[in-house]
Structure formats: structure tokens, C-alpha cells
Amino acid sequence: MPVASKWRFSQLEVSPATYTGTAKDRDWTVAGHNFVNNFGRLNQLKVGDKVCFEAAAGQRYVYQVQKMEVLQPTAISKMIQSKYDLSLSEPVHLYL
Image 1 (cartoon, rainbow, N blue to C red):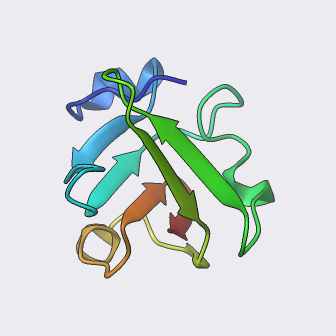
Image 2 (cartoon, one colour; image 1 turned 90 degrees about the horizontal axis):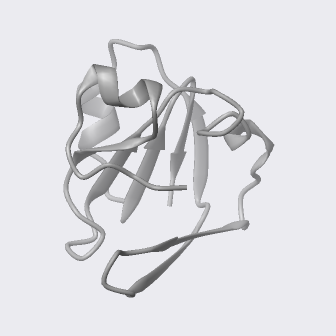
């Protein structure tokens, strides 16, 4: 699925979007709705599973789930201030 490069609330109706950071800088936070075709199956991932992203220029980024946590919608600072290379956020928050 595509991930938009800039976060806008309206964008989340279409696809997940970069909230902060980049894959290249290893500080990427991606936000999305829990629609089936977006992040609807995040809650099925388990610690140790792999998640892959391919950039438009062809770079491939592979992450391994390290931690799963349910955050309150207002826990923005916790979402973006993690020590993990990638955070995926909807009702279930994944740290990779």
C-alpha cells in the first residue's frame, strides 16, 4: 500500500501517511486509520513479525516488530519520541 509523504487528516481516508521522520533516517512514524485496506490488520501482527516497505526509488526497508502497545489518541509525544526505527500508529501502536 502507498504511504503518503505528508500527513493530513484528509489523507488518512485514502492511505497511511508519514507523521514524522523518514525511513532513511530510521525515525519514521506512519499514521493510518484501521480500515481493512490500510492498517486494519496491524493488531494481527506479533512480536518478531517482519514489515516491509519499498520506497518509490526502489529502496527496501525491512523492520521487525519489537513491541506492541495500545496508546490513547492523545499520546502523540509517546508515539513520536520512541527509540525505534519505525512506529506504526492506529488504535494499536507498533514499534519496529
